[in-house]
Image 1: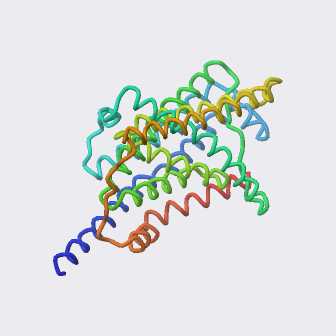
Image 2 (image 1 turned 30 degrees about the vertical axis):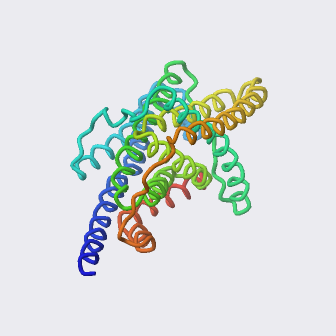
Image 3 (image 1 turned 135 degrees about the vertical axis):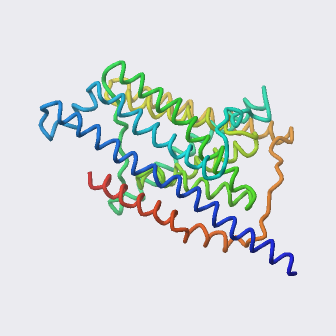
Length: 322
């Protein structure tokens, strides 16, 4: 009995330390985004004599905006990755994206994940309607530049760099770091942290759902590669809809996209059947000597996690007011 208590005590202290390291590395993300955004807006307003009411729209059309996108979307994620790598004594390596499965099996995992995009959109629609009853629906369209160079940079940042970096951070480092404390705990905790890094109330449920899907894809396929592909496709669909939202083709594209997403859902179900038949969905669930309630309390009352939640609430309320 004493040996079990000793192991449990060690696990509690290790979990507290790991949660603190993970949340602390994420705490720099939102402040860096805020500072970068305001810095670029200040520089642009100083060099351009644009009235305050037109500043935001003119800024998106300017040559500053592509560089703003790089600093606001890429630099903060890189800083969080580098800090967490330092705190966990982990080396940044491209081999983290090397899946343990290849060929058709990897493709089936990607198809399985793509079907979740439709479910995420469905959940997001229900969640937005629920929040609108309390005036908390702050969903908005993506701010996409109007010039060709800006659109190219936007697509590279949103559909390539961001999915790769976010999957490396949340599924490559955080999920892996939390796995010794239980597989289910690792999936749910990493998905929760992934969700609160997106500062809108309306995005929380669908992003948490997608976080769970991404985590399961990484868990079963052995790397964040499959989840990065699905993440990139999800972002690309959002970008296409935003780009076409102000054109005459929006309604027809939306209807075709719905058909495509429903088809992907069917393909996803077929992929699940194939993978189950091949035994590719069997994974050893890791257990932890710390009880689920104790693990939940450790996460909920971690000072860095509380700070993250406070940052999320402030930025979400500011976005709601804007």
